[in-house]
Length: 108
Image (tube, rainbow, N blue to C red):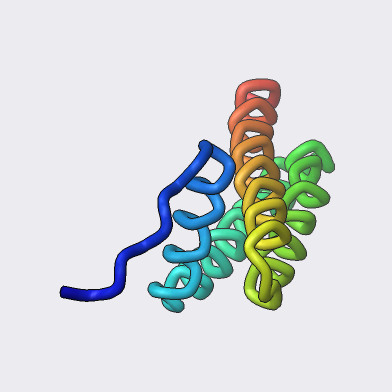
């Protein structure tokens, strides 16, 4: 049989292992996240040009933070920083995506 994995002792350690496995086992995930961030930035820029309003540019700082967090996740070598930056990445993307929808409702 193969080597036994040590026991997971808490939700934090489980989350760290899941994030580590996902980011290291599937390197295409880095490219998918980068393309998704690029698409959302493009949507914001195009919406700003078509609506002739600066409001669609509101999510850009959050998407910039998500891009920076994605870069930091890719460069992280330890579990804890990788988990922390993945949390920042997920939160910034979620709030940025929500803000795109909110701005769409405000202008619609």
